[in-house]
Length: 493
Image 1 (cartoon, rainbow, N blue to C red):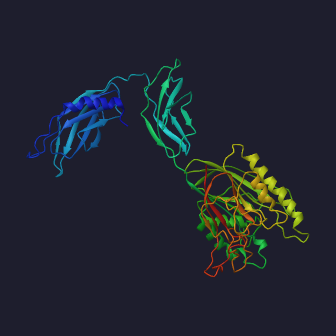
Image 2: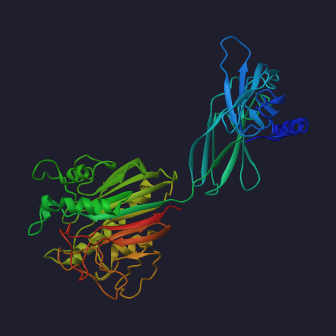
Image 3: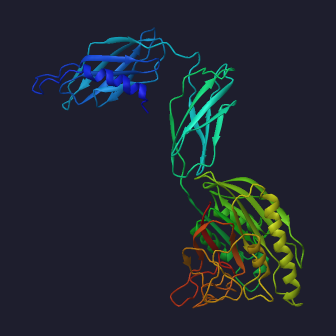
């Protein structure tokens, strides 16, 4: 960016330019009328050059073993920047016309001004950015006691003083261009350096985040159904086709499977790069896991907690991620609550699931002190037909984590509280029972779902219950699991 002072220098030069001679000249005349206006760190150069179509300005410091710098241009005025103060330079202009003919001007010499401050201006760079923040950094300036930083955007300039060579500006506007400059100050808060060259940076706009939940049916649970070996290719294909940034996986058991290793290790291996798992340890969160696309999100923190015990041991696993495209952070949780199929009746386990859901809310609140946006997914083993109520659903909603589908208790043709913008196959149940005829509820807005994606307040542009069916509603190929993958596209606030 050429500052006001440079423009003033250009203004003093322009009147001195002579009129171009007639284009009928037989040869390419060398550039003439060279004029140089120098500052401590740059020089504005202009010249007259009839018939030429492009030029190269050659600038060489007058000293032993000096290196010539070539500056190409298609105008008869340019700026040679990054010069050294109080230094003599030799300059000439090389011209070329459309036919390739060349000519060279007579060299001229000029000397840059002395540096006005005892220290050079900081060289500033953007260190990090998100939709609402910019981080700046620069090398320390010798003898500097502090630094003055000015950021200009859509409103009044914002000024801050820092003792360290870093600065962070928050509460900015997304998709907005800002201009920053920095100078060093001494102990008396007097300028120790000139202002740095102005740095332009634009905060990114919102970026979609694809999240999903998938109960993949444990190997030891598949009695009477397809084995893991027969359906794992279909499970992997379902996940990769959904292309999630983060997915909560349930029933990816840690028990040994035929061929060696565990089911969740085999799943991760077959997904391959760039997918990674938040915790590969056995026992960390039992069969509840979080897998993420490491090209799109960065894992910052992770953890897991056991839930109140019912018939079996249950867990919730969580992670804090940063979306690489925007720098925004979010909290993600995956869980699997106690099922209902017990000979003693579901009422007992209704209360267990209620306690477990409350524990899930507690896990989120304890491990998310910064109140980051939350996505909580999993198999809650409770549908809208549950008696006396869909307790886990109500507990999550009461805690501020909403179901974008609005799949409220006993609803059919309505979806109270729904805020998803586009629905894809949401009338299909998320639990398919391994029936070849996919479980669909024509005329219903939502299917019968034990699987959910709950979110804190944020935009959800689409939601899909992933089914691969033909025109008659029958499954095509191998049914991957007794649950269908559910996925949503969300936009972090």
